[in-house]
Length: 328
Image 1 (spheres, rainbow, N blue to C red):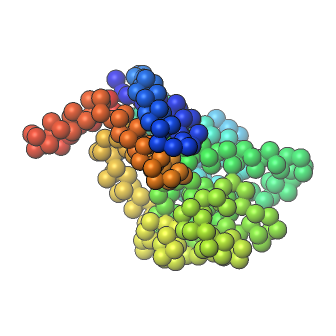
Image 2 (tube, one colour):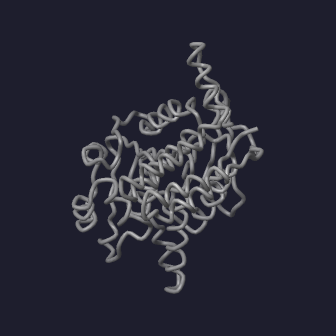
Image 3 (cartoon, rainbow, N blue to C red):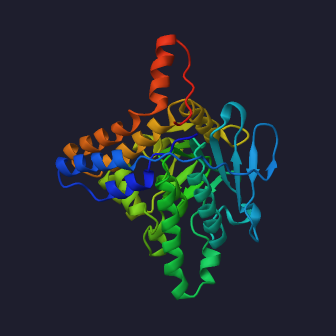
């Protein structure tokens, strides 16, 4: 039986920022009562697409806009989400938003997932931002709700409890970069292009860019990039701290994806509950003062103490073998 700590309760509690350490400690006590064990739900694959991968297509008029692969074998637990709108440069459409919401919901329900790689299946493009051709056909009253829906999607992506890695092998502009910013880690090829370019269109980033970019690279640099609608390549993005690393692009145009896959493989064997709690502690702790952050860390640490995985880790260390974690 896989274990899922009451992450929803954790998130809801932590979002109400503790005013002091006492409130965070009270939160820790409530967490101890909210632990729950449920059967993991497996996502049924629709078809095999080559050895070691499972591809799921979602029902839609444009079913190929998003392809989701659940890797198998040694890579079991890694999910690859590939955007596939070549004619529209992977622009964010109503249909793509719908399909990505479905994907995120499936991943949330599957406790076997250890990490997610968000990438593009279109050479030279990660995501060009909003589908402006589609938006031009929208009535003015439709624009606001669509932007809100896209913002909600990117927020849900950022709230996934497991590590998310954006593999940027091409242009990530506007909403495309905002999507990548919602991921925990960004890896780019040296030839990739990134920027929040909305001010060129007399608008501002509307899906979290004005909030996440300053948190990643600092306020002053974020203002410079947004005000000037500046586009940077992967090498410069790495220097600014926008991406964790920049790799030289290869002939097949998937160097960032391959690097992201290697990172996911490093994450895969680690304790899954520990990874989730570490992500929660970091994400929530960075938003509050240090004292409250330390109390949040303490509360998250308390969640891993009674797990079978912790005992397995100690046993494996004593017996000088690799641990086999089950998320329990």
